[in-house]
Image 1: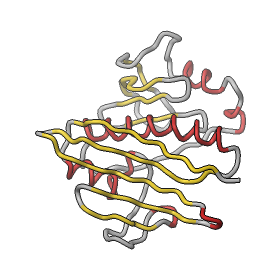
Image 2: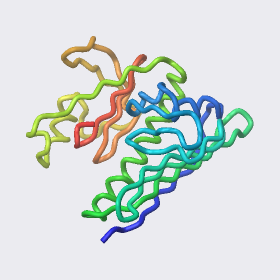
Image 3: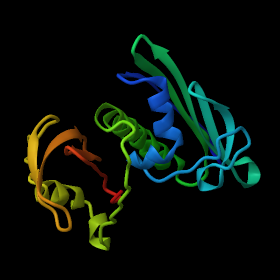
Image 4: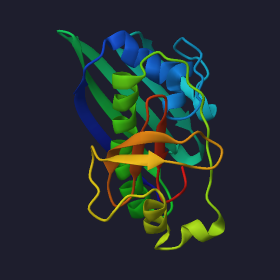
Length: 203
């Protein structure tokens, strides 16, 4: 049996409505993951969805539908307020299997995604983005894997947002980073030219 859900967030960012709109609807969306939208109502959307509202730079809704009434919908309501942008974000839909764990996971991911959006808009707005993803090995699914990752990044038990760390990973140049997000489920690092988000699922 499916369970309908709604996750709602509101906030304010030091950016323009146009910059917010571009970040969630265009190629600069690489701050999260690559996504393409046909710029019109009824247009094709990411993951096989449809754009149901296209009102730049104020209101954007995309929706994916499936069998037996299943759907997944994302909505952004955007309002300029004297040099800042107020947003209302709503993720709604139906979860079918293990819905409580799915809901808890989606709720936590929402906060991290919106934080990452805010970091992109504050520090990298409209800069070209290249999305790179790396999944951990099967062993990274163990209960202590996130702590192993934390220690590997040089983050101590008491590390908190704003702390600096030297990021020295295979395949990239060593650089100084700021810990801009930390919970039991997520770590976010920011350098002068990149955002490095990590969660227990390796995304």
